[in-house]
Image 1: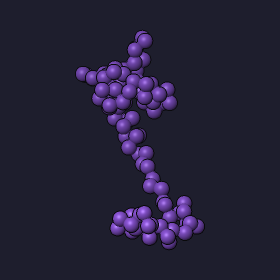
Image 2: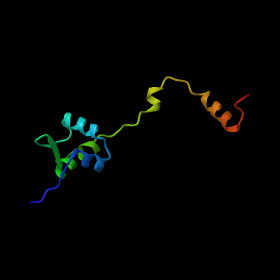
Image 3: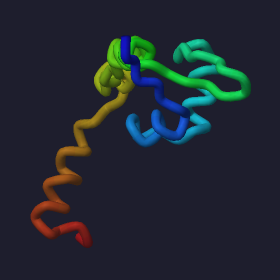
Image 4: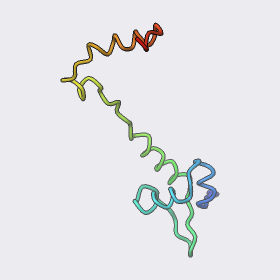
Amino acid sequence: MKQTLYSKNDLSSLLKLSVSTIDNKMGAGELRYYKIGKSVRFDDDMITEFLSGQTQKKYKQKHFAYKHRNTDFSKMGNAFSMIKDGKENE
């Protein structure tokens, strides 16, 4: 049974993350690892599990209309059209 083990430096190069970010993820329990003496190692299953957990985090677009629902923007359209037409100094 051949299994590839990665060091923190290998993993940081592979995922394009800093070593300190990997340390933080390990400390938070988001990234599992093997402790061998003073070294830590990661296998493919651990990396895949970590990445699948990261892709579930989706950023939600903030709804502009909800946050500013009581704000009057009627004059803003005129301001943008004046800038577009080159009349901003009038």
